[in-house]
Image 1 (cartoon, rainbow, N blue to C red):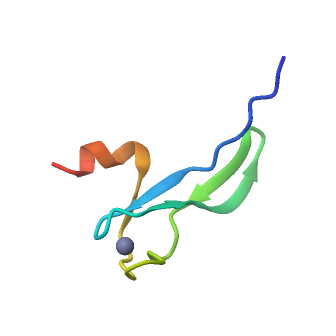
Image 2 (spheres, protein in one colour):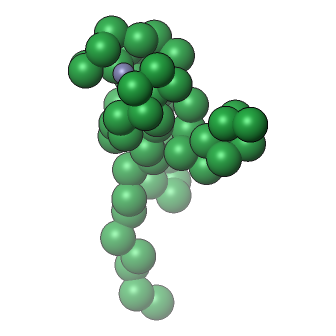
Image 3 (tube, protein in one colour):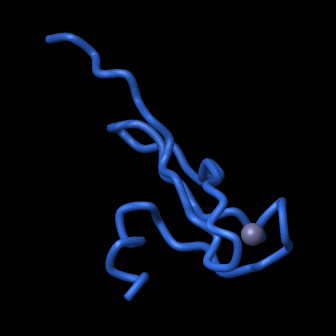
Length: 59
Ligand SMILES: [Zn+2]
């Protein structure tokens, strides 16, 4: 079975909508666990949502 390349979780800044790669917080059997960055590197906003949740967050 081919090993699928692992893509990092991505997070979107709620203020400037810049996308950031998640910070690796743990290793799991299936890859890595990601956490949102502590804050946006562009504007300093501390609220970042997972990319998959973004369409739901943005209403
Ligand atoms: Zn930002």
